[in-house]
Length: 312
Figure (cartoon, rainbow, N blue to C red):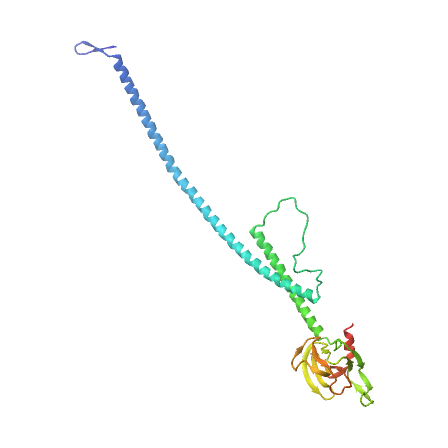
């Protein structure tokens, strides 16, 4: 290819010959430069975008890490609170078990006393319960629900404890009253040999007052208290021989005379049915028997009325 160059000054012209391969090389070089510049610009722009993305994502990651750690801390706190609640519930259940054991013992006392039938209540076995099986799968109770159930159960146990304590007090009072209730025979075996009131004296044959009843039996057999009380006399007394006197309160006193041997002393607290002496024939007596007297406020009472009380 020829390029003609024309000069203004001299009017001369020049012819410049250009070789094709050189032109192609320059073209490739120019294209290479342009493409390199474009690639460099793109690389710089991409690097800038990457840097901007990294600059934005770093705080986000830190934020998520912070939230995750906060959730872990909260989970740990929940676990600790749950363990504390479980420990507290365990302690409350232990206390309730102790209270239930006391209630069972009290109920057993009622059964043994005959106040409650043993065929109705068996305190050695759990209460019988049941019902048809539900088709839906059961759910576990939550801690608040379980706590509320325990509180309600504690309230019911406290109510039952109060009722049973009142019942126990009433039963104890009734037992005391029963113990102090003068009734029954002062012997375990024997027969009535002389009644209360006027009679023919066994030694003189004269009409005399007999302030008690005589119950004959075998020498050495038991003489028992007809009611609970305190021994106020236990010694020999003229005409009575060996005598035991028991104060039962409310002005009631019983006497057991002609004993062979005395088994109690003054100040002893005796229970109903307790042996207080052995039958004999000491004092003014014709044979083994017990002279039984009942006094109310110092006045003689008919012992047969109190003996017959036991059969009413």
